Length: 58
Image (cartoon, rainbow, N blue to C red; front, side, top):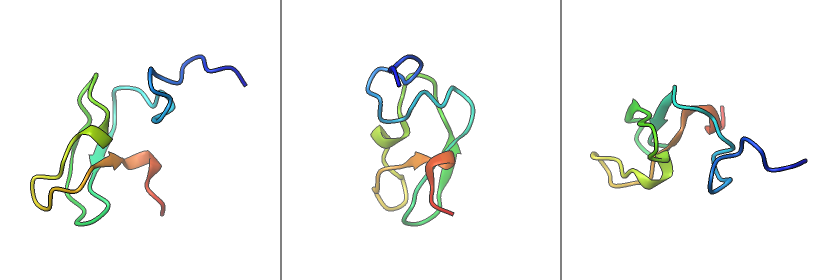
């Protein structure tokens, strides 16, 4: 597999601009902001790093 379409850091696999960032600890969510990976955003409620909704374990 080549790395095309995986984003700059290859951590989020290029999931696109739509979607939500979710706190795996408390469940807080916000819209994903283009150019800002969810894992770089801290939850305003508990200060935990957010993750993409699509990557959460169900």
